[in-house]
Length: 98
Image (cartoon, rainbow, N blue to C red; front, side, top):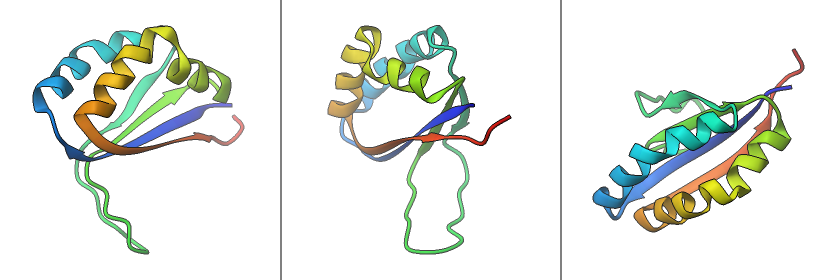
């Protein structure tokens, strides 16, 4: 069953560090069989008071693989770089059975 990680990058405090992150993270995502399904773009709030800024959603083959990517040694330094360059939120969610 697929799993998804959704980040919302609310503010960018260091565009340079974020650019470095973006140039390196794809390789690590791919290593864990992840693929980007949302990378920014137009949004429209349909209900509630959500205020999405820059949404990023990555699909993984399963919840455990998504956790493994997020907690991996390969992503550790990149995660710290992203966290220092942005204010963001993130969540892992399980998809529907295939």
